[in-house]
Image (tube, rainbow, N blue to C red; front, side, top):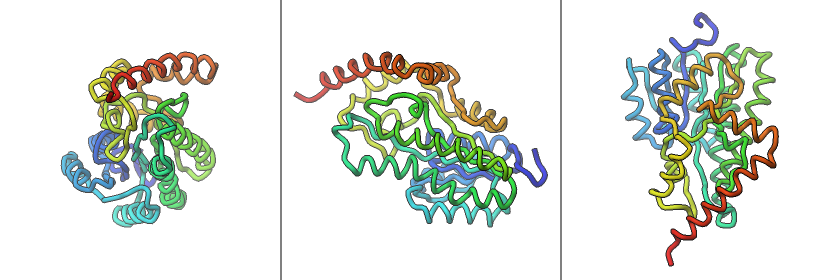
Length: 285
């Protein structure tokens, strides 16, 4: 698609937050490979700069951005639009995980999860959506998680905030349709990124398993590589899918939870007990 409307993806301008690593970096690579100009935004400025330099065709640029700062998000969106005359896509992707038992969390843990995972996309919407309405096109893609649809013991802040991202995205999609603006929510299953080991570069896992045991648990869920996730996700963004679940087999769990939350919880409970036992065995004596 070209002309004055949304471009998919040749000649498009896109902002990707959390773009210094993992899913964000993979989305940036995928967008650039399809001909988009990509602004990689991350609070790890050094890594964002390095990732931008690797994009093909000189299509990358970077900005230091902490998505917890509403004014900073506003500035990045405004500057991008001013520099390029358009903003086709905003991928609000920055996220962290806070893992462990709810009893172990501090208020700071809860605040950090809400500030990054939920308020980050909210600030993105506040900055980009009115501008997209004025230009008559645009596509906001918020990264949530399959955790939004399932009970998430040992990751309650993550599940709670990602559920909020899904609710935000679905409501905004209906409102935005009348203005020619698209909204999608990306709900990955388990993807092989740093978030699996330490909650992300700025996340944390409290009283959790040693890394080698975490790897065993995650590998059972067949983690997808980030670039494959990006390829499949961008295909579905181009088709304007409202809720994008990748890998596709995770849709079965989403369906199970929708049909019978009690059954889904019954499946999850033995796994929780087993993980608790492993955590107890791994704890220092």
